[in-house]
Structures are given as C-alpha cells and as structure tokens.
Image (cartoon, rainbow, N blue to C red; front, side, top):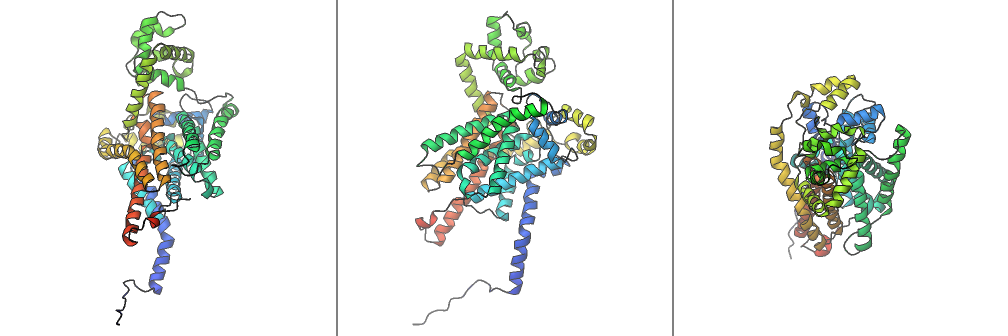
Length: 485
C-alpha cells in the first residue's frame, strides 16, 4: 500500500539558524533583565530619582545619628547607607530592592514548576508593574517592599527547602531577615506566618506539600534575638523599634474608645490627658502628627507620654471589650480593601527634605531636581492608575480562595497552599496595620501585588494544562506536574 510521505514543516538546521539561536540564548537574559528592571524602576526613572516618603528622612536620621527613632527602623536606615555606598546615591537601594524582587519572583516560578526563563520573567514583571502598584514600592526609599519579599522568602524556605542550593537558602534567609528587622509590622507578620506554618505542619498532611518548619523558624527567631542585641551594641539602648503602643493608642482615639473612657473617668490621678480631652482630634493621624495635638503637649515622640498612653490603652480595652472587638474587626476589614496606590506620595515630605538638605548635601541636588520635589507627582496621576490597580487588586485577593479550591481539585497542592498562605498573609497584615495602627492604603497596597502574582501563576498553569490536553489527547496522567524546586 502506498504510504504518503510525511512533510516536515520545520526548517532544517543550518549554520545561520544555529548561529542566531545561540546568539539569542546569550543576549536574551541581559535584554529581558534590563526590561524587567526598567518595569520595576519605571516610577523612579520617570521621576529622575528614587521616590521618597515622609518616613524616609527618619530612616536616614536613625542611621546617621545611630539612635532609635519611633517607628523608624535603624536597620533599614543602615540598608539605605550600604545600598547608597555611604550616601553617594539613592539609586543603589532601589536597584537592590528591584533585583531582589525579580530574583524572588523567578525563584518562586521555578520552584512551582512553571517557566522561569527571561521572557517569562519579563512578562510577569511588566504585567505586575502595569496592573499593580509594585513598581511604586520597589522604586521607593521605604521598607514597604521588603514585607512582601519576606512573605515570599518564608514561603519558599518552608515548602521548597530541599530543592534549593545553599546560595539560594542564604539569600532567602537574608531577605527575610532584612524584611522583619526593617519594620515592626514585618516582625509581627512573620510571627503570625510561623504560627500558620506550624498549623499546616500539624494538620495539613493531606492538603499541603511537605512543610519544613525549621528554616523559617530559625530566621524569625534570629530576628527576634538580633534586633534588641544589635540595638544595644549600636546605640547603647536595647529593645525593639519603639513607638508601636503609641500607634495603637492613636487608633483607639480614632475609634472613640479613649474619648469615652476619659469622659467617664476624668478627673483621674496621673492622667494628664484629662485636662486636654476636649482637644482630642477625630483621627489617629491628627493625634500623632498634628502640631496642635494634645499628644505634643504630653511630650510627643520623645517618650514622656508613653507610660500614660499605655495605661490608658489597657484601661480603655478592659473597660469596653465589646467595642474593642467590634472596632478591631471593622478596622481589619477596612484595611483589607484599602489597596490604592500612591498614598501620600503627592504631598510635601518636609522632614525628609530637611534631613537631606542638612545632612546629605551630595544627594540634595538630584533629589530636589526630581519631578516629585517639583510637584509633578499629583493625586490626579494616582487616580488614573487606581482605575486599574484597585479593581485588579480586589479581584485577585478575593479570587485566592476559589483558586485554592481549583488547584486542589487539579492535584496542585503546592498552588493551593500558596494561595491560602498569601491570603492569610494579607489578612494578617490587615489586622496588624489596620487594627493595631489605623487603616491606610499604603499598608495593604505594599503587598497586595502578591495576589495578582498568584493569579498569574495559576493562569499559566491552566494554559499549560489546556495546551497539553490538546496535544496529548487530554490524558489526565500527563497533566500532573512535578513541583519540586
């Protein structure tokens, strides 16, 4: 019987095609890496310099004066010093932040068995930079971007420990450690994630991949021990970054618990705020930062008021437990959906301006020539960006639980656990920042991009399964994918 000749539609190899293929393999990584970095640094490149915030100057001041500043980590200040090569240029820290972000995204993709080549990395970087606020954090001189990087690092150490090289393990540990040392909310979140990992270790045998508790636990315990010891060695004063209890008191002022207690108990011995209660503002921000606030009359951030505020906090919480629970839940829920990009970046950051002018004259000129200091970063800019960023963020967050169910039904326990881990990290962050401080878009938007990242990973997984189904006759056995790192 005559057999028809099979015609190949693939061009035969030739010296030219081999040469072009090898050349592309050599240059693809640099080209895609530069493109990925440009996506994450786009706001800084457009601005003409790194983006700054109110708190940036406080971190610089902590490192310059080598002292503890309420709410401003000395360790992030030292990171700024090291990344800028001794205050030479603030392009260094944002470049390091962006490179660390790219590395973790690529490592996460690889460990979950997804394509992790240069084009895929560029695709994810461009997608996240376009659809979320990630680039406004990688480009900013703030420790905010280190919080989501800490979450990813702890996840990879927990689930993919055996498949990592020692250099990767060391890099992940350093990033996680820097994240939890650079902000007290990062340390609190890390402790919560350790509790989640322990619960998964004990109960998740049938629905999670293998869990390795020792690596992430060692990192968090190291951070808990290092922070007070290094503070003592560097500043002569041990303990953790101060100011946390004052932020909580501000939230109780905003929710009316303090006003209620003062109205029912004043005059009270040892409570100076009784005489000032009629001047209490309506918001936590006004209480903490307004120059005419009673907080300033009590000594402000110098520490004289700390004992009284702690006492009032305990008294109000004890006196009104129901109101405390309700306002805690409400603040957490509010924080969970406050995800807009650009919170307060369009305002004048006068403390930062003064510190850079007074202490870093070598940096002052490019800093003040940037668009941000010229008033070109406006609320209108962020209003337009948030037409995309907010719905993408909210959709992705509330898609995590359905994604977890879909992944579990399709044999991808690793993606099920990742989606749940990210959702719980977002919920924990909303509680820490919303209930223990007060809700701000910046607190949640800094790590909400993790949700679109997971959605993108699952979308790639679904597309690959669908393509394999078409090519291989939808054989379920061939749809199972190895997920070791």
